[in-house]
Amino acid sequence: MFKFTVEETNFMSYFDTSSRKALIHDMKTTPLNDVDDETAEMMYRLVRKLEKMTDDEFDSLYIMPDSLLY
Image (cartoon, rainbow, N blue to C red; front, side, top):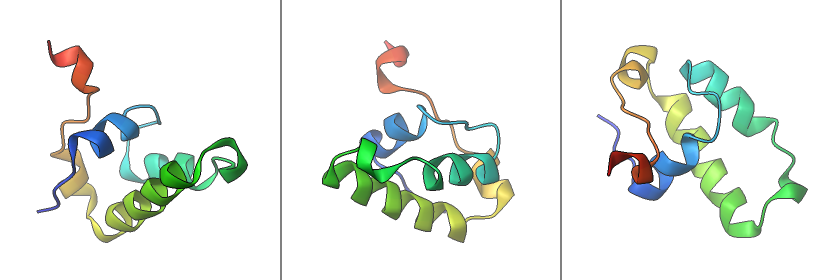
C-alpha cells in the first residue's frame, strides 16, 4: 500500500483525480515554469508513486484537501 503525506494529498486534490491516469496526465502536462522548484520536485515524486500503483490501489485512496475535513 502506498502512503501519501497530508501535503501530497492536498496537492493532488488540485488536479483531476477522477482516475490515476488522469491525475498523472494533469501533473505531467503542468508547465514546470509555473511552479517553484520544491513543488516541481513533489510533482515528480508523486507521478513516480502513482505510476507504480495499480488503478485499484488508487481507487481506494481518499483524496480531499485537508481543510475540507474540518
